[in-house]
Image 1: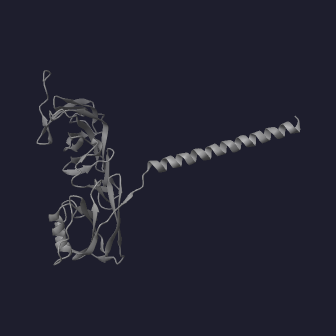
Image 2 (image 1 turned 90 degrees about the vertical axis):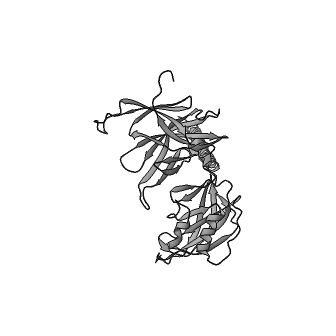
Length: 323
C-alpha cells in the first residue's frame, strides 16, 4: 500500500478521534450546565434583628409544642414570642415584631452548653435552614442553654429544616400539590415534599422513618362543593420490618390542599385501587387471612369505605350495589 495513502488514513483517523473527543467534552459540559441550572441554589433571607442569651432549662416548656427538644424552631405570634423573651431576657421590654409579615426563628443547645449566634438563614424550595455558630466549650447542660433568635420574613417559608426533619410552619398547613401537603400518621404530623418524608428513627440513629405516596392520587369531590379533592395511599416504614399502608385524603380549599389524618389499612398488604364515589372514598386491597404468616403473599380481597366527618376520614359500612 502506498505510504502517502497510509499517512492520509492516519491523519483522518486522528481527526475523527479528536472530533469525537471534542463532542464528548461538549456533551459533558452541556450536561453539567443543565444540571446546575436545574438545581437552584439557596437564597439568603434578610435577617432584620438577632438576639442571644441564656435560656433556663426549666422554661423550655414555653417553646411551641413539638419543638421543645429540637435544636431549632420558630415563633409565629406575639404571645409565644413574649413568653420566650421573658425567659431569655427577664426585665427587658419585649420587642415589637410584625408577625403578619415576619417570623422569629431560634437556635439553641441540645447536647452541650455553648454560646451561639445565628449567622444567616437560607431558603430553598420553601425550606428555611438556620446557620448558627457555637463556641466549643462542651460544658454539660444543667440549668441553662444558650439560645439565639432571628427575625426573618415569613413569605415563602413552608418548613424549617431540623436535622433530617422538616418542621411545618404554621400558616402553611395547606399546599398547592397534595404530594406536598401535611398528613397525620399515628398522631404525628408528616409534611411531605414531592410525595416523600424522611426522618431519623431516633436522635443520632442511622435508621430512618419514611413516608411516601404510593401510586397516583385519585381526584373526586369529597365535600359536595364541586372542588376536586384527592385520595391517596401512604406507605409508612418506621425503620423495622413492617411496611404499613394507609389511606388519606387531601381537601381542596380554594386551590390549595390540606391533608387529613391517615387511616390504617394493614402491614405489607397489596394495594389495588382507590375511587371517590358520591363523596365516599372506596379503597380496595389484598390482605392475608388471620392464620397466615407475613411471608404469605396477600390474596384475600378487602375494601373499606370512608367519608369526611369534621375534617377527618372516618370508616363507614360498605355501600350496597345501589348506593
